[in-house]
Length: 83
Figure 1 (cartoon, rainbow, N blue to C red):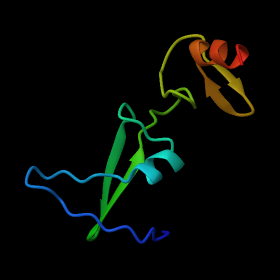
Figure 2 (figure 1 turned 30 degrees about the vertical axis):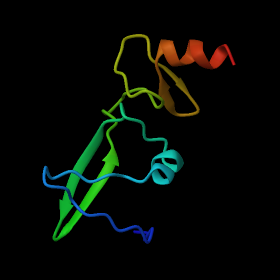
Figure 3 (figure 1 turned 60 degrees about the horizontal axis):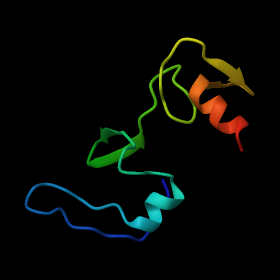
């Protein structure tokens, strides 16, 4: 595990704010689902990706293609092709 040196307090509703810089580096938006794990006294947050879901959006759909070992849904493939 790598320390960021960032310390945040939990508010009265049990929330914690992830700093904007960290969200930007890790590509976390307000719509990004996060999975919560615990290990002893450690809390671990990780981007949630369902098994077999699209490598970009996480969507599980029919017609998934594989590119360089990564599953990609039709919508993301179309978006990539438009770039």
